[in-house]
Image 1: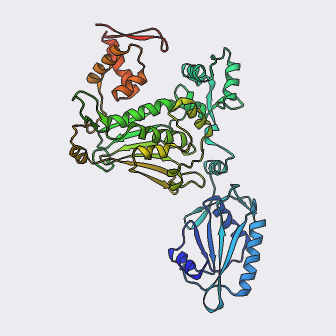
Image 2: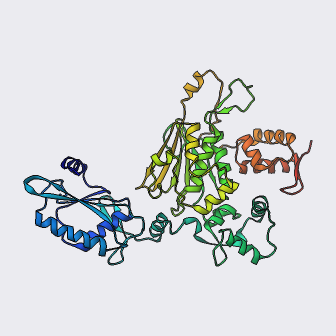
Image 3: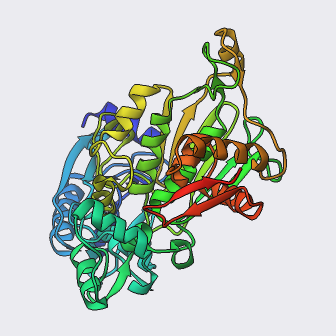
Length: 471
């Protein structure tokens, strides 16, 4: 480090990666500072620099004493011991500044001599004082994962039909005959704990009503008019719950029904092509559901504005990942059990680390923001202005507005459902939702209305049955 690079660092002031110390006399205090840096993102301590950025520097005698103190603090004052780097930078009048660099730790969490775990909080440090923070530190060091957390749900909360279909389709085996066999199978599949309770992955993928067990892990979607968040005014809103495959399908339907449709030479009654490829949101929503931080008790938020679509996931990028690295296709598995089941076909999956790159290949105008302080990761898909779409010369279909109320599509949707059933009597509710552009819940409501009106009848079961239209 040269004097110029030192001055440029000091000019920036103190923050979560830089700290100034006029002198160091207490090894325990220094050890806690180094532990805090290691448990967070690493950083530098400039010794011989005052809080206001002035540089009194250190004498040669001070330099010898402080370097010995640094060595003792790193090797004896922190568990596990740290490897740090020091550089002496000459300043005016023969004085010296020690630049002490502490790397991001690879064996987190680090404790001080008294067993306290410290984290950086801006330019200061603070103690870890919650189980959630402690779990996150173990998660960062790959010693613990949120999706293996035990829940209070027994195997009686399992959606038997969903799990039966999964076993048959993926593992080519039948649903176990006894509770004992079922419990053992769930444990072998990493979906249940040793004491026979569903873990978080088991709940999110296969519980009958996951929102009753973990109500915070849902998607909250809102279509706002204009480009700003409104307190009361919205055009469309819905909360999506259930197992992750259902949340994904419902969220996709919400996005697609709120996009402009380009006719591009098709008839006026044709559905048109979405302004942004469906594949873009498929990749981004799978990424949000599979890689969000499930140690943060908060929903994924899906906001649609006139000029952009935002997907806001709880949890910043893990470990050493950066926005630049994920754009290049790098990845870090935060929830390995969930990702393994996504790869088995429960959600659209095209390979680890490829989702962001595939989305960017389809639509390059996407920004990513990694907010460590707010513990959020935001994906922003920028839309073309409606005026530009219209200038392209193709007719545009815009979503129906229902300002201040949730949009329902009962009459028109019922007609589309009947038309689809005429074409394919075995069509499923997820297929209907995707075809029509509404949620599965809306499809179910419309079907119930058609059945109560005596217009539609279900013949047979969910897997082998079919729909019969009563003329």
